[in-house]
Image (cartoon, rainbow, N blue to C red; front, side, top):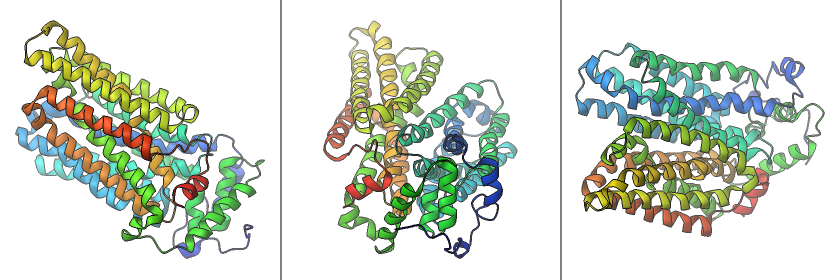
Length: 473
């Protein structure tokens, strides 16, 4: 169907975006046709991912200083660290509806405000209660970011760049974690909290200079703004009529379907996409990543390897390998990288299991440190190349726009619940059997390989409308 130029310009939505609404003409004059607008928009959005990483990375280097300065018990600090996941679960539940109601940019603004408020509360905190409230606030913002950033990038990117650009979400997360860990060893815990405001400030400023997601605008019936935003992203000399028509036709088809609800997700039409999204989040989290990530220093220490050297190696490796994954995802494809990643996770777990088996049975003890560090580094390298980023990439691709909010919230909530479950049970599992823990994780990652082979499709090189129609037909 043709795009009508005289359709109501979006006032029925009740929300005017300053970039694609009344200030649209000024923006078009300033930045219309800029060939790097997709890259710039992605650059702005992934500061939300970096903020995510700073939230995750804050608690590890600050534990001793905060407990000493505020007189916290181990239990009080443990609550401060773990309550982040509960805030993120609430953020996950509300992220989809918020992003659907006020737009992808609006959701990122809300997340940023929660994070800034949380960091300021940590900076001024004088006891455990303000710390916990602040941690919930930053967790909430982190939970929303974990959904809306990859969705926004996937919706603005051309199909040949979508995988690479969406993977930058994970790259910035691990960068935020690593930088927080490193500078947290030289800055006070209050100063480190102030540095957490910086990515949100950059994001809030940058959002004034980028367009809203064209697909969200089309869904809201804002045809003029939708075409204008798409033209800005693709360049002034690019003919966007074919892409605009494909998006609009797909939106029109979806509008004929029932309104999205939680029960609607379990309709046979959407069952496959829901299975893929939730299944990959379960595979990602129950394979042991947060147990290894949160307690990596303890793992190295128990294996007789320097925790400082091991942790720095871990942090650097995950940044480098995540960057490589971003380079290769649109060349190698999602599914091959997922299979490579899951296979490496199995291998890393086996190395670690052998190391702790030898230690427990006092056989070949001299080889234990080398085997353990090899296992952990193979594990994190393998996770970073695929299983860390690609489930989020696929989640942003497979859900039709009419259920993306609800389905994305369910998938993100599943991820955060799995994150909490893995980190909570890790110490109990290690106390039960150090090598048995890694054998268990190896088994779960083995099942993940089977799931990927049987259920997960390849989405490389297809438009969102094409692959969603294929999966949900």
